[in-house]
Length: 228
Length: 254
Image 1 (cartoon, one colour):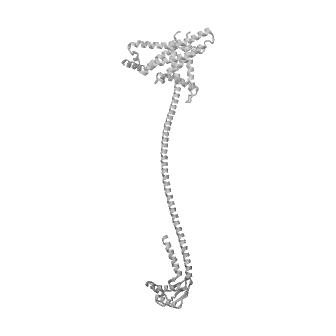
Image 2 (cartoon, one colour):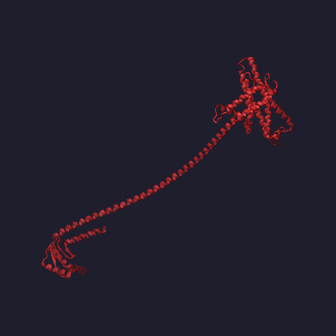
Image 3 (cartoon, chains in turn orange, blue):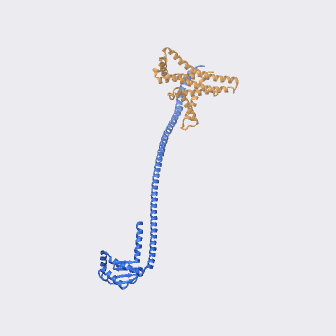
């Protein structure tokens, strides 16, 4: 997999094709959302029904993990699912590469997840109470907690990057070796893999955030278990 | 695969912008309309619940009213039956009274009819008896019987009670009074003289006497002294006899 091509520069920032593709995805999603939600009605049409179904499904999935925080987490988790799904699927379009097949992109998303975990955790539990769980059940475990935070973030980035990059590379190799129409089943696999990886990334992010928001409850539960 | 800090940084910024875009143009509008629809549905559900509650209350009220109407109907039916029985009893009593009254009226009518029939038969018998007696007495009426009745007349005149004599005297006191003597057979001079003397004794003075012959008397005399009349003949005796019989026949019936 070759590096992303730099198209132009904005000061110190190099604008690569990956960034432009991301902007394209953002533009498509933004315009589509604006057009689709301009005239919402209580009696919905097919498109509005589909959108309501998607949003409600995302909200329902969040509610199943955090029943009281669905409205609060919906923008972040929902955008993760939608963006990663579309970013994964962009790889199917000829001459375009999936942004999620770039380690810089997935690392940025993983960093956002890492930061959001602590952001939501501190907002939910309070600064002192939230960081207290790193010392539980023993302060000796603090290095392991910190290592866990780093490794799971890296795992998030590498998992998504590796899967999407390998899919594109496999499709390219099959196309080079077997011919024009042979990679079609592989593209079908790409679609399924894109959906699965988006779901996994978003669900893991949700679970991490939920763990952070419920850290105090987990701590209390552990202490009660130890006393018993 | 090289790590590009520019892409890393821009990707973070891009994602945060996308979060804002989707939150602004997708999530919030969709969630708002879903919430509005949910509110509408909850309102409809609440209205449906309220209507169901009201319907249940109305149903219970209707059932109560039905039960009450049924009780009232049964009570009214019972009252109606009692009134019908009372009315039937009253009408039966009135009918029995009417029948008894009619029966009594018919009994009285029958008795009266029988009495009238009996009286008519009796009167017919009396009349026939009187006719037969008159016919018989006409056949046996002779001067000898006349003489016997003449003797009885004189005996009656002489045997009058004092109050009868005063009544005759009062009648004879009328000025211009003329005595009338009717007989079935002609009176001879001696008997006329003897009778005039007897009448003068009764009246207390001598009065002119007109003698007349009346065969209808069958036998005997009819003496008129003003309003006072002395019957001594068979015709009037038969009349008195018939009247007495009628009177005797009417007495117990009436």
